[in-house]
Image (cartoon, rainbow, N blue to C red; front, top):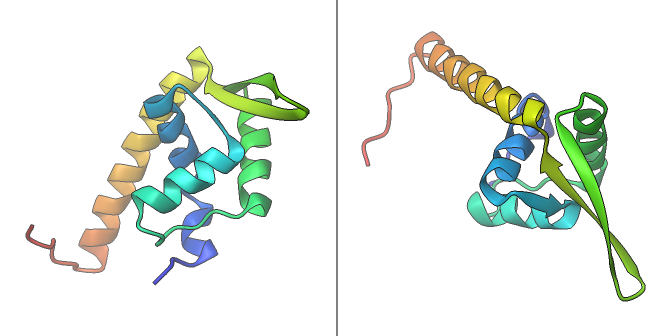
Length: 113
């Protein structure tokens, strides 16, 4: 079961920021594959969703880019800026609070491990 794009839309920036926090720098395809791996294919980010998100984060000053040439290929790496590090903490806090609110609103019982 994969999640709908509507559910992912509001969390994609947070997902990308957290991955960059954990991995220092990543390129686009690497981000999509890491998300698939970590979610056991439940979340599959398309290029059409990822790259506009990365460009928006860059425009907001939250990520920086670095280009590397690998043979004839160009690979663009994304890293968090100092502002991005602070924004990641805020985004994670906001998402955690939102999930807690949704659990209470929908009266969802937490699963026991």
